[in-house]
Amino acid sequence: MPRNLIPRSQAIPAASLLALALGAAAFGAVAIGALAIGRLAVGRVAIKKVRIGALEVDELTVRRLHIVERDKGSL
Image 1 (cartoon, rainbow, N blue to C red):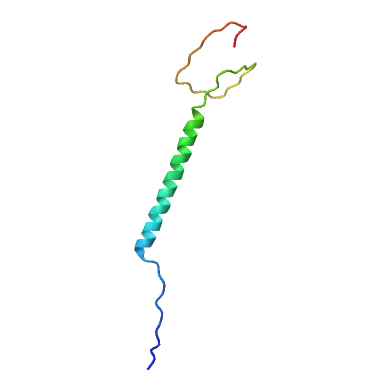
Image 2: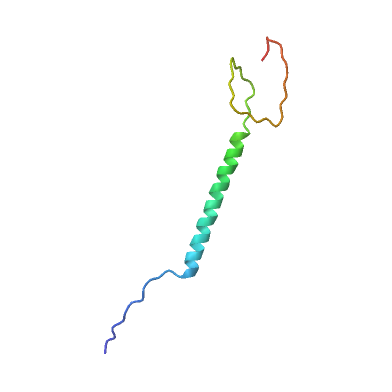
């Protein structure tokens, strides 16, 4: 006599959900770290030579300031 089988629901196990959540969190942490490192790298870019006729600054924070007076002929 044939049996009528009722299929079980294909629920995702809790361990798989936890692994997926941990993987997503790790990926997010790596992405945020990469953005932070990129921001630091861009912030460290220095301008070697620049001529400015007029400069207006609203707010300026300087940790070290070295002023070197040069002749008008050299930059």
